[in-house]
Image (spheres, rainbow, N blue to C red):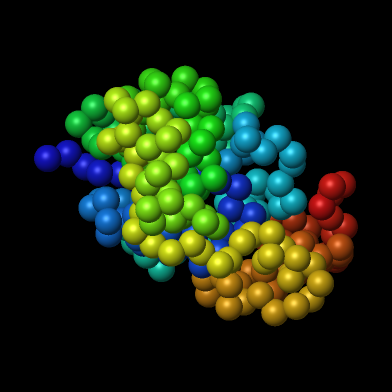
Length: 224
């Protein structure tokens, strides 16, 4: 029996406890040997620039997963040019790990209806299975109905919902709380929360982080 590897792509802006919960459920329910978190450089579904720079999102993801040895963070999408198409990432992983490895890509329930319109969708579904995270009203029987309605019958066994309730944490809320100076630590893994608190991420002005000049405050780039 080959390895089972989960691939979890997203902006992770920032990586929060909801992301960590999804990773843990996927590891348990799909019998994964490991799970790889993949911060996206530019998502083809979200063409706007993420508020936090790529290096900062990568670091926050590393800190958020550091205490679980089954989870790692990879730079596959950050270090290549252009949008992060899922097909290209999965095809690279398939070649890297070999055909004996089963790959599982994690998506949110709101992506199911558009899945067959993704770049090279049919080939993608041949290379990996999908684990779907419940969101909003799309959970339980409603999520399974959405899968059955949106996918051709030949692909439905390649897509399965994760047995969990919708997560009540969003990166948008974390950024808003951090920007306004409200409490946000309870929404984040311990080390990620410490990083955000120390370096005032998402605030209009903040001291430079460890990858910048530590001598004084650094204004945020345009658009943040």
